[in-house]
Length: 316
Image 1 (cartoon, one colour):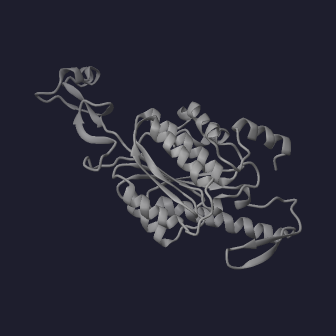
Image 2 (tube, rainbow, N blue to C red; image 1 turned 120 degrees about the vertical axis):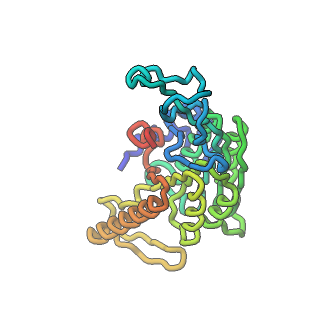
Image 3 (cartoon, helix red, strand yellow; image 1 turned 45 degrees about the vertical axis):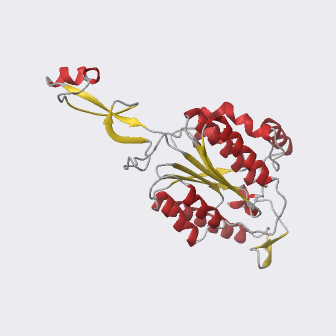
């Protein structure tokens, strides 16, 4: 458990109180865009689907393979090393580099409005979304997506240049600071809209704790994944995995319909809780991986940059 002074210092460095969002704390992530790598991790075969690296053989940005020289090949692409080694003329082939839109779904719903250690899960999700958005801008790709809470859902069609980043950041501010309205937006509804919004061949990031994901939501994810690269990032609070060993007394818990009192001093209950949470998280990861999605976990109990610098971002 972090001490109060350590938490205060981290919050000061992040320019946040851990609960609210404002523009300066999101703008700050522009400096750290190089910590991420959004280059494609899987080939998308269809050129018509807008694949980022088209399989068309031509003079492009990305080296593909070497083959025997054929009449009409550009002499500038001859691979002289392979030619000298084999005694036969070889030429380099390239894959044509294509624009790839990036879509970010950011969940700021009720279950994300919680934090026990450093940040609300919603604030951590917004920080990651900001970092992703700045990286997309630096790559020159188009950015779009959805930001939603129980009260509202904002749809952002793909756009280029820095305006798309500021538009996304402001959308998160509007949703996080929004007033409670009668409507009830669920994760499944957001995924259904995202499914209609996403262009084939895109990179899609899903930022949520996925606590309200249902069978219908899984069907939407499966449909999105058929023609796109999908990365799911589960935002977890430390209490989502276990409660503090020194905890005691009773805690009132609810599933939204029923309430109960949990004995925090019970070692058996603590172990049972940890096991159940671990199994749920492992099942979520397995389900995403079975659909061919990448899956990562991010804690709201530690700054995003600390986690990226340690191990999370590079190579993902």
